Length: 175
Image (tube, rainbow, N blue to C red; front, top):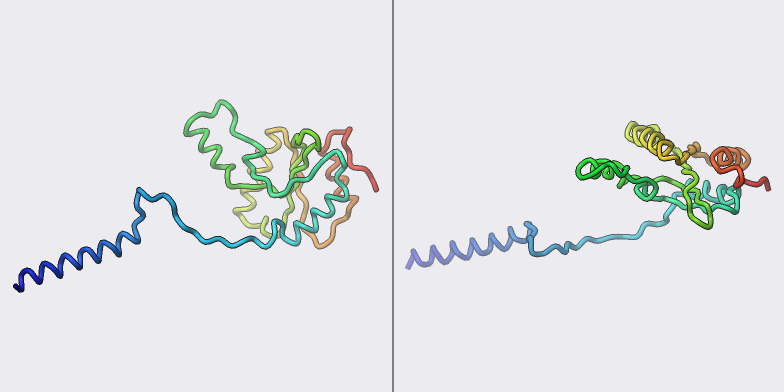
């Protein structure tokens, strides 16, 4: 009697242990994981929003301003990259984004990238990212202009900086 009671307890303990463990080990049969998400307060920080308002005032009507664009939507690895080399090149751009993109209004041709550099751009990781961006974009024929984040922007200075990268026929107009 004691032996059968011992085995019953042992089997029940094993079943209980397996139930607990199975709750912590994802099953290959179930690929749906449940996560909780909360909304972001806004797409742009206060500083980015202030700069966007300046851009709206100085960017010519021939262009539209896109914000927080994924780097991989601006450039892609060259066609000669295949397999692992392609994936390595793609992975180096896939999780990055740029602050603002100036696109020609009718075709959405990318004419320039505008980066707003706040104090985080002095961190080693960000400096490395910026150096990468500053090499890749011009190599791909896309100019990039950096602006130092500020509480206030001189509209004329922003206008002049943008004018250096837009095609001559699409220069910002003085208002």
